Image (cartoon, rainbow, N blue to C red; front, side, top):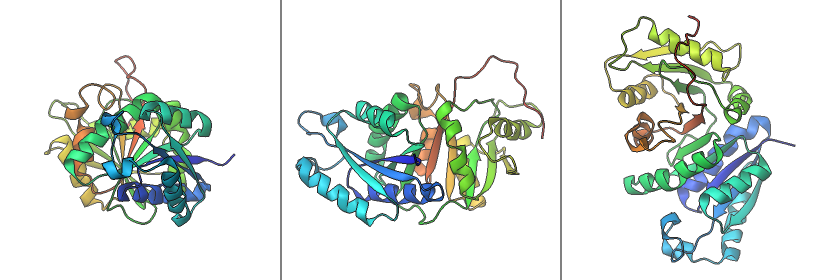
Amino acid sequence: MPASLLVLTNLAEPAEQAARYAGLLGEPLHARLVLLHLYHNPVLDPELVTVTTAQAYRSQAETSVALHELAARLTVPATVEVSVWAAPEAVDEAVRRHQPLLLAMGLSPEPDMLDHLLHNQALPVLRATHRPLLLVPAAAAGHRPRRVVLAVDAEEFTPNAATRAVAPLLAAWGAVFTVVHVAAATEREAFVGQRALGAVHLSALLPPATAPVLYESKLMPPAAGILQALDDVQADLLVLIARPRSFLGRLFHRSVTAQVLRSSPVPVLLLPVEAPAQPGWMPPMC
């Protein structure tokens, strides 16, 4: 069975861009796309509506036609599904049936809509599925990633099963990888960047033959340092580690992840990891 990528679409322009970009990412593995539309009545589910009232009141038949037209415009095979369930339940059910490598959704350029999307769809989806989540801004490049930034701190991380499964997709792009470590103000240890690089090697997320470059920043806040690294290395994709206590926790609105998502000019791939292991772990120096 070929690999699949699940795209959450609301028929707005950012969603179509997300579908196109997801298709580019999955093409080397001949992955098929599943376009999942969450059809909700704004009177019954006002908190879940992410489209205009006129769009939301389309009949399911009209929505299905529009989705099939979108699928026909894509360059990779795509199937269409329309669900009337709430977002977490609909996505969870689709994940069980299709076992996608990752989920994808478009990012709105409007700050209010972006925050609404992150809190009302991105967070519930990650909590419900613990699957890698690709967030695609409207200005995303129209090609597969060539320079990928993987931003990590100096703490250990263990990819969950779904994140480990996405490693072949990362390898299929043939991209150059840069590991970015932005030193926290509290870090006083030597070679912290090397520890971060060692953690990436141990994670086995990147192909064994990959020799990622280490980029270190010590004079900027973490979010600003990551965004500066994107510009310095001319990256076209950012990979972030989604830790349970930050992105999945109650402090998301103050997390580095949230700050980066609001300003990233390139698509962001969130990779969920397991909860931290016991203290005392030390990765090998590279």
